[in-house]
Length: 633
Image (cartoon, rainbow, N blue to C red; front, side, top):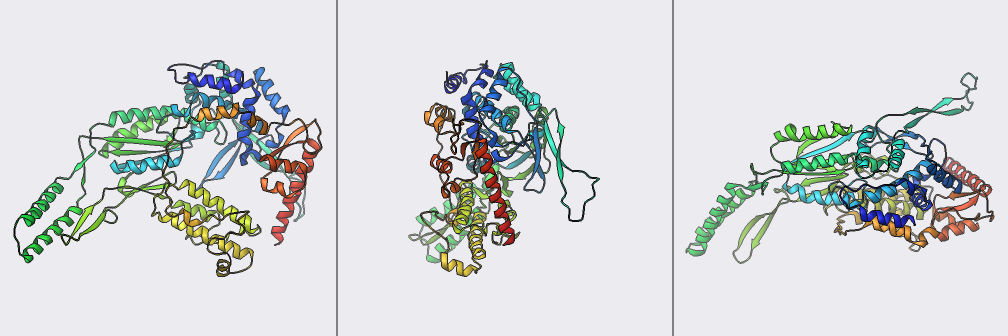
């Protein structure tokens, strides 16, 4: 039976209450499972990053695949520690990342396919959106836009080092609730216990005397750490295991929501508003029924306008003391709570419950990022900024009646407004597109590229921002600034490349340059302005989608399964997978295997060890020549 058929059978048993899956370890013997995991990894840029064994995805071959399966059958698969590195965070701090070896990454991907079949997306908590297929940040933003209208207090929350501090017992307890295969659970537990290694560079022969210009040689050394808590952030399996640990947090938040939500109406109308409306109605009725002189009618109209202005200055919402509202949403380790009720209950009841629940999992709240604010001040979540529209500035509409010759004021309902976070300008500044004040700059790192390539690079950024911030409202000031920065940064980059001025580049190429329509089409930065897509909520059976992919014969034929011969010299032995960085470079050469790569629309091709080493040396030599040219220029 094929692995796709086995997963299809598992899908029928997912909805059974209390059912536990057995004999999952035998699924690790199937080659197609690792092929599917390899396909997921090979398409990522991280596949070229090595672990502690200094091997990349290029080392993937049939021998590695057979070695993994044979060790699984003997129940002797040994996980290697992850390589710990640190990457900068937007706030200036460093984030630790654990990079597993390629062999372990493919094995983790195979385990993840099985676990995703058991924890189907439709069975996940509807208020959790992080690392779940079919759910994205734009859905959270669209929900919060409508929910903040009925909220009074906002609790922004974050966990401190959640991935590194979550308890292994919490993870295994959630997994054992649906899995009874001890060998499969033990395989995952050994992954958690493998630990990580920190790289150090030590000077080779420190006692050796060197001249002032002598080259120093360093040797890499590693220090092994085996903590009893945490799942390394950076592994393929880590996000899923982290979500399983936070299932306990989600259940406790649901219980808290059930306890606090009561009453039919969170807000009620202000009493003075009804009185003012009654007085306005009485005066207007008297004007229609009675016979008044023109001067008396003007006095009545003036009295109505004064009452209407008083009406607009009163907040129509009064908190109902007999009602409470509690809403929460989580994306990975970031969460937000929308609460309507007295602020005293937040510290006395809500925060105590949240802190105790997080302590059960082994994590703690980040005091810097966890804060309580009023909904009128707005809040930031997942790169979006949520505010309530101010009635005095945006919510008043002035209406003039031609028949009655009067001016009327109407109050609009308070509405949620979604904007981009101001930190996006800082991110563009860090990438070199603008300065600290948001003034566009020339992207000097791209000056040596061709005009077509520069446009392609800017299109990638504009397309990504456009897709992420599509949920923002039309009058977003931040998105307008971003569009301005990218537009003039492109023109300044062209001016730097052609040693010309900005005005000349604009007159030559226009405001939105298009170099060659057959090669590349310029995406207009102004598309970011006012871009509002209506989100179509389509119920997708994602679990069935990738089962169909596994069942498709064309998928297996066109995948990066090691072929039976070298694509260059036709050798049948000592085969490896060669990866290129971009498909565009494959069409410019005359090598037969490079034409094969471009035709198959893939980034890998099977070569023997000899041809693989030749091509790798050629790529490294070309990189060194480009670096030398850039330095000399």
